[in-house]
Amino acid sequence: MKQVTLNKNMILLPECWNDLNADQYIYTVHSLLQLQEGKISLEEFRRKLLIYYTSYKSSGKKYIKQGVKIRYILHLVLAWLKYRIWQLFKNINQNGFKSIMKSVRNRYKPEVQEENTREIIALNLIKLSEMITFPLVEKAINMQFTSNPLPMLKKIGVGKKFDIGVVPITNFTAGEFADAMDIAIGWRQTKSVDLLDILVAIIYPSDTSHTLEKAKFHAEKIKAFCSYAQKYAVYIWFSSIAHYFSLHPYYSLLYAGKKEGVEEHIHLGTNEGIIHLSERGYGSHSEMRNKNLIEFMDIQLSDLKRNICNAIAIGTKPSDIADKTGLTVSQINMLT
Image 1 (tube, rainbow, N blue to C red):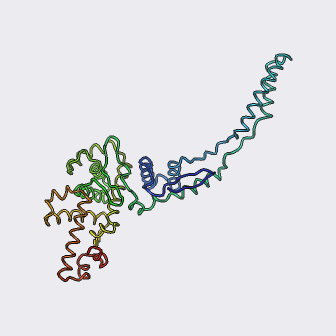
Image 2: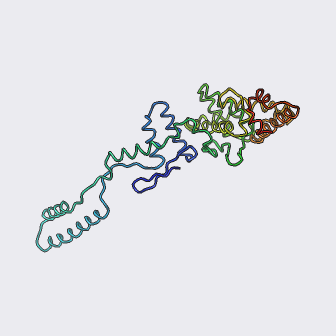
């Protein structure tokens, strides 16, 4: 969070996706979709987010300073008592009393001031809103989430977790991740809402045993109870996991030399890894799919390290290994 001082008050502005709570996250994604569809301008987008994040909204309404207002009321009360007594003893009629009170009100009426001129209000809003840049930078999605920003969706259930710390912790299986990645790539290419429903169904499953058939059935419930903004928000978070692996100093070695995009090479690498490890005797295809995702990645790394060490042991040069694997010599040295 960025601290900004405004009119002697401290305002906190989020600097990345991870600074947002669940409601702010959904609102930001909804506003981002409106911007992408041309329904709001960039200035409106930033101003909406500023007001939602901070509740800062100078209305420009007129106000009276509290001390002045209290003195004004006291004047009216004292005048009312004084002239009411005069009315009783000096035979002042009701119209005369009202005329006197009107004169008193006009005499002591405090000057009404503007809390802020419109120019200052607009300038403050513009300056503050321009500090909100993270939703507009595609790379800001990368590694910005330390956990699932939407741990639960109402009427749907609890979502998968992927907590980033010293050691990542997740309850994704390799099979769930591979299937979800396959669906995510399909959605990105076709923008089919049906595929987005299935992606959400995988990440917010109806039970603990995953199959694509179950996910497709569960997707009907997603269709009924989830807004498009919620679904797109889930996609953004899930995409950040692929970016995490692609930027990790060790896990990224599993995808070295791939020419596809980030999601594509993570997807292909996971599916190929399931087949490869089962063929290498680490377990059956089903066992590899049901392996915890991080354990599965660690097994792949261990297998890669073993293969490189065996190649070097029989005299293969690191430069030759680099040519065949797409790894750099320095990366090969990291694994040996």
